[in-house]
Image 1: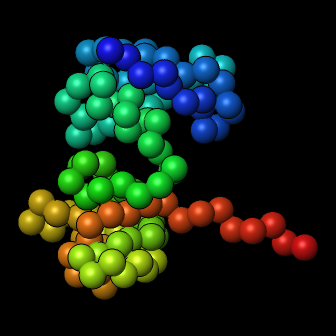
Image 2 (image 1 turned 90 degrees about the vertical axis):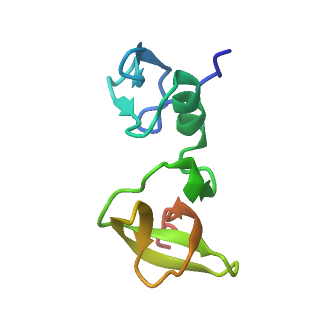
Length: 114
């Protein structure tokens, strides 16, 4: 029924459901809260939380990146590029310069300087 949740991305603490009616998760250690705007079930929220920044997110999953940030985006031709997210256009994600985005993911952390 319920997935085992990954640890908090901020402090590594335990995460649990803090509101079933609002479909919200929270960290017991640092009090960070995680909500999902387009979620319709608690199971979907748990699945989304556990997928965070761990790989490609299909556009159909309706998770939305933050407007104004850059992401890695894959298109219909399998090309991957860094693109700026403008928001929604005609109900679909609009990444600058990407025709037919299929998947996106956050940019990886930069390497440490020597």
